[in-house]
Length: 92
Image 1 (cartoon, rainbow, N blue to C red):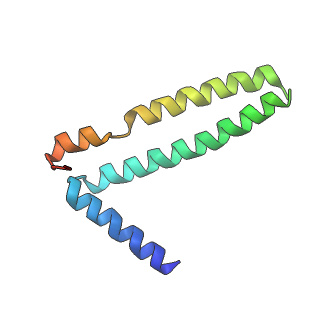
Image 2 (tube, one colour):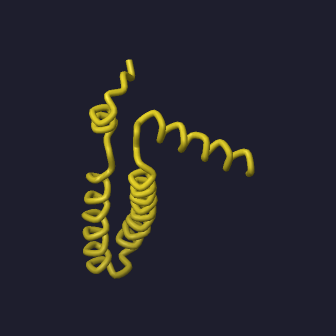
């Protein structure tokens, strides 16, 4: 476990140096990705409840709201192109 933590910290620092991402930007992106992961789990649960006919209409509405939140979070995450443009790093 300690090795995993050390490798993770190393990769985060290298990413920060390579792409010129500020610590705050990196923290915001990691938090957004975590929220997206939690929303995917929540949407999976809601889909299973819909399939099981458990409060179907209510869960359809909850799933729709969760899906919209996920789309919003996903659209704000940086793309590789936006990182390239920001730093002008050649990935070829």
